[in-house]
Image 1 (cartoon, rainbow, N blue to C red):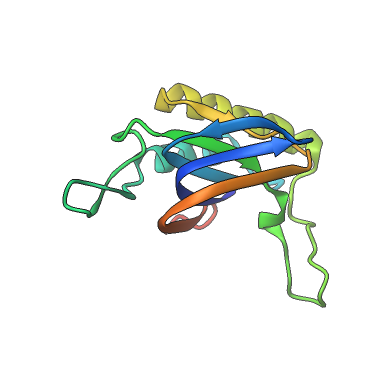
Image 2: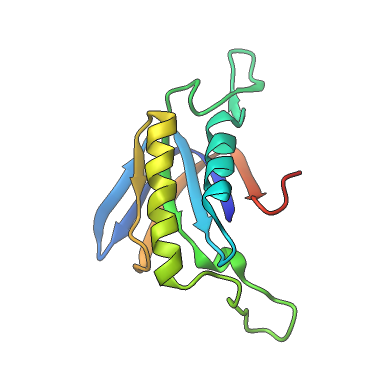
Amino acid sequence: MRVLIQRASEASVRIDGNVHGEINRGLVVLLGIESEDTQDDINWLVRKLIGLRIFSDEEGKMNLSVADIEGEFLVISQFTLHASTKKGNRPSYIKAARPELAIPLYEEFIRILRKESGLNVATGSFGADMKVQLINDGPVTIWIDSKNRE
């Protein structure tokens, strides 16, 4: 499971021109699911996201988590995070999970994130053509892969 997170002062996702989800201060989470992902990947990643200290304290140091600031999450499914660009110019998405596996994991990720964080979790819609708009605060953008727990 891979995520690209962006610290945002605000963000929204539109589907067919209508706002489907929006947040104020918090994290935009682009979530890519691969076929080997399990509940363990979800649990580890959710704990990491809730506790990651990337928000500024009173001294301007990144010492606070999204939970500390009572922020929000905007979770967007993003199969392209598993793109392979080794050969040619057209990315391959062979590692991305098929919808029959990815959708239940995506829904479980959102359920666990809501339960464990107690924060607002807005979402896009799996497989939809979405327009994501955000103000990246910092900018702060971080890549996390549950298969590479550095």
